[in-house]
Length: 260
Image (cartoon, rainbow, N blue to C red; front, side, top):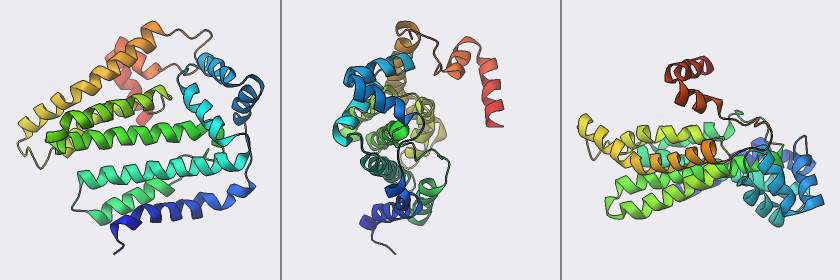
């Protein structure tokens, strides 16, 4: 029986108890030092060149902004990383609330599991993976605004533009969550359940509302595959997407193997 405004604070308290108590003892680890060295020695240009060779050049803008705000001490980075995780949990909970408004208890506990389950065990690498949580938050924000656009049709284009912009921030910050773009039609199907109980009409609407996001994704894929050239071997090559485009049957087989 918590008041609704206190739910995000409950998530924050849970995250602090689960991950935050050790923050004062944590430092920088593994790949963190690559980012720190490049920025400390070469400035913003060093991060740009590092990310350009790494295959995600636009992520340098986010990294340089973080260095400008957080500096080189470990404590601010770990606090910022935990807060980014918290914001991602909150937006996940807000998405569930929009999809299943009649089930507040279930959506709360689902978000709590999402917050605490150690599916992401590299939380202490705050510099390396802080951008992952920021990108994940913007992916969630994009999905949230997408749902609002169809549930509040009088402001459809306003929320659609916001959703596309947030999705662009996500995919240009890294490619960790690009695959979630293909969850959009399923989420739209769920979001339209109350408005369009007829399955055929709901399917048609879901596909129609997905088109702007599919076009935006197509622009990114065109740039990623046909315009951008990594100057060295691309260790972040999206093999699964390439396989699906080249041979859909082989790509589906690879998906099944990965799922297993």
